[in-house]
Image 1: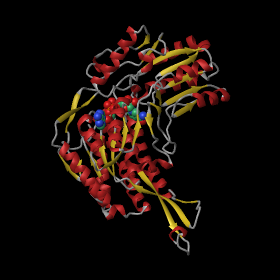
Image 2: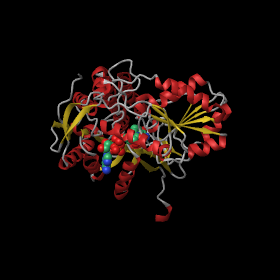
Image 3: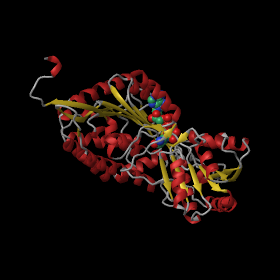
Image 4: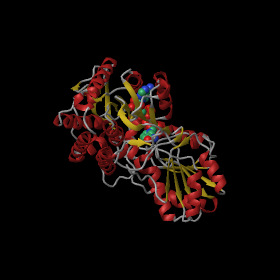
Length: 495
Ligand code: NAD
């Protein structure tokens, strides 16, 4: 059993039990309660926001030059790396994810802090072309207090993706983890607290506020001290936050849902495409915003490809995240498993053929866990709800296409625009399709690969703004223009 953080939230630099309602967090592989975590109260959100505003304005932080702020990020990266085993085990217990995956997520969180430190030290401000007797400068300043609200699917990686650039930008952060998976964010909070303490920086720079989105999350968004919200989660929640942000005229960035097409052209390397399609949807048990959940296969290859795919999907190993052989781990929560199962029932009502899966695995090993079999469906039009709504589970729906125009029309016929995969040997076709599909990220002959150096975000209802990349820090800053007069004579009009 991993070391469970004490039932304490981080409120304006102080670790203490939240004054709100308790909630159990459950290991979805066994159904056992692993910890009870008290939510913070609305008063405590306000206290954290006040503390964050004071910490952001504290000269120890406000006047710290970028290369010194970078030291904090490097130290957090080191502490994360030193705690890899604990953090990975904790996240596996809380989310159900396979240990191989949670170890990779911990590595990615550390890498995010390191990359952001390097980006911070090398970020340049500009002397812009002057059009008069003055020098013009474009500089960047902190926003002040940033609210960071995350979902349950990859907490440590999504926490790092918000925390690192927000701190790099010179801000204080109020971090809210999802109700189902608060533990690893609380553990990360302990590491950041330690780094702040070692470097003599204000403790209130980070609060980790546990509790329900509609209470704690909402209070963060509406708090007058909060000047920006960065959110990852569902599209309908994102829309609610955008309304609240509009009231304050506050910038926000949104990483939302997806229903991403994976495309197999007739000339694809079939072995590579099979492996890529399966990884794209069934890794993380499909609980991934960029899951390739709609499979489009060229009609002439369709029967052969889907037939072979189904054979292989039947052989995927379903089991607990702690078993190194597991490929498809349990879903995050029994309630979420039931929602995935309800979607497959809906697909049946819509007339789908269930080619494999379509239920919970049988046997005593699976009895108490939130398991669902990897499932392949077909026989539905792209307009069906099954093809249009995000299921966020191990459910793939396959569709044939006739030609490139038909493919692009179907792929783009979705409210989402997060990601796309293309499997082909024809580089010209790959280029044409990649440029025509509405997607923030396109993978060609690969899938679900990520680099912190490459911007990430969605088009259409998949989001607003971009995370990652050298400019990621700028999303957490305010740009300011300076005109510096150098003329010897007074301004002519005043004479
Ligand atoms: P969710 O939208 O229900 O919750 C996300 C977070 O928002 C949680 O912390 C929740 O407590 C909080 N929240 C809920 N209501 C709120 C409100 N009114 N005000 C403020 N905060 C509120 O999403 P989820 O079910 O936790 O996660 C799954 C969703 O996240 C999927 O739709 C998935 O596609 C999306 N996601 C997107 C990305 C991306 O980068 N685009 C990455 C991962 C997950």
